[in-house]
Length: 372
Ligand code: CP3
Image 1 (cartoon, rainbow, N blue to C red):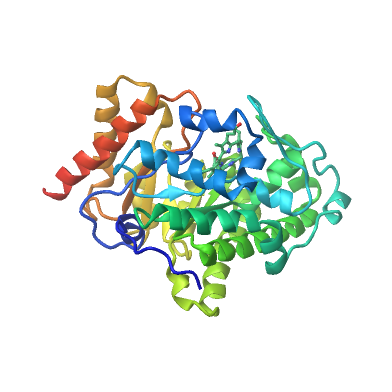
Image 2: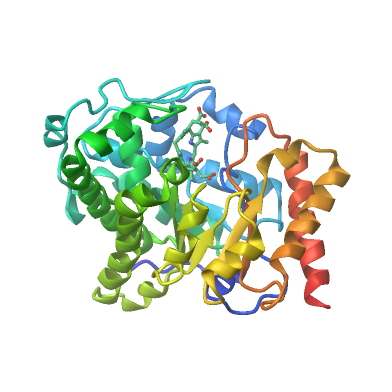
């Protein structure tokens, strides 16, 4: 069992478990990425997935934002991608600069599901060992400054990429599958759920101190389709990860906080109230007060400043961040049970200085709000 340096700042982990914090902890999705010149400097010499597969490079990219925003970020998130799971199932995925992910051979018909591998826990470790190594290395490299987060893509979001073959405006291919081949979809979703479970358990065992399930395309489904094709799988992942860890030789790891990000699916919030997730991430279209009402007081909320706010003049970033924090700070929790974040990831054309303004404002305003 690895011995890691003691943790100096555990604010995110406390907030995730509903314990009091002296201010609102903060991190941002895609905090390591193309908006940082130091990321672009490394990226220019390497293919994206080769970077993910080289633990030293993944570690370096993960710590870049912590170095730049010294003392301002309360977590690191391991540099990797949600599409490493489709790769582990045998699919080819390329990252095309300026275009995003591309699958040269997407799933076209149900029989294509049969050519996918069926990894169990051991295979996941073999296939994605490079992510686990990157996590262990980074956890050491961080020296206990802040917790290290791990992640997976939700089964529905992964299925959608595997069928669309990349980004899409309508997801019409993936949705045709849901309606024409529901049986094959459930089979595939079940297989992806197994892979997500095994991968999250392995990430936590390798050193991830909190994990997030990214359901980035949740809101593309209406309430009934979400209830059939996404929600039950996301719910199962949290339940099964915690159960597996409880039964393992390190049962204390079952306390590792788990977050879910059902982007766009505001109607799904009440269903997560009774789930095993500790944290529910909100995108910027969700109202913090409505979300709190939907989820009750036993979940921590994460989010949710519109990323485009970072294009506004600095004073306006400060005002809008203050307004967001004030909404989350409303009764009954007085600003506790909140992790500040953007409502989605950083954009490549964001200015690093704009992010600094956001981070500094969260520190300053949330400290003030606690003193009221
Ligand atoms: O947040 C972080 O800093 C950690 C690393 C991280 C990346 N991708 C690195 C990345 C995380 C958590 C992800 C998750 C991810 N990947 C999601 C879920 C979150 C979300 O944004 O909704 C999704 C849908 C993907 C799939 C993906 N990867 C897309 C659609 C793209 C291209 C579009 C874009 O924003 O660039 C990627 C590429 C990607 N993943 C980059 C980075 C730093 C940029 C790649 C490059 O340099 O070309």
